[in-house]
Image (cartoon, rainbow, N blue to C red; front, top):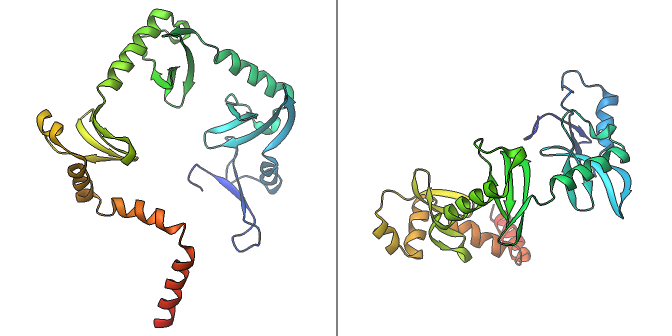
Length: 245
């Protein structure tokens, strides 16, 4: 069992070549899979040919089977297996995606595209992904619907940040349960503060709050920067310690 579900492994960790891993199909089980079926999984990624001058292949990724066309990744519909997808079917999937990705309208002279993702239906505009609530008819979105969704998103984004320091990857944001600190990918508690108190917070104040919750928050950053250029120094340090022992 791996992080993303059942898989098979070809080779061992002590071999000269690193072992290879392949995800099981949705119809397969660890308890019943045969050797031949397991070996078939290592046929992926499978090159199918080319379309409009770009290479076409199929594979299974973190979110399921997909067709790769050039640098574009397109999900294969549920119920279809990549090993059973030929070039003709792959081209059909590519063309269906092109139709799906065609603009359904424009806002501020920029195209609006709709799609379905991991968290449901959405529209994409100006690098913003906007969820489409059930109150809207996703299959028949009109220009007025799109305008409303985009304007609500713009307003929400404008009110999202209270303060931010992009170069430090630190920001104070409005959240569902109140303001919080975003540090990289981490979300840290800020405690109850008035709008005036939040406005007076400076970068150094915020860093102190971060350190109170994660004492090594900035050590990780500095260690990562120092580690790469000083490989030789790191080796000497290890040798000295070994001698002392």
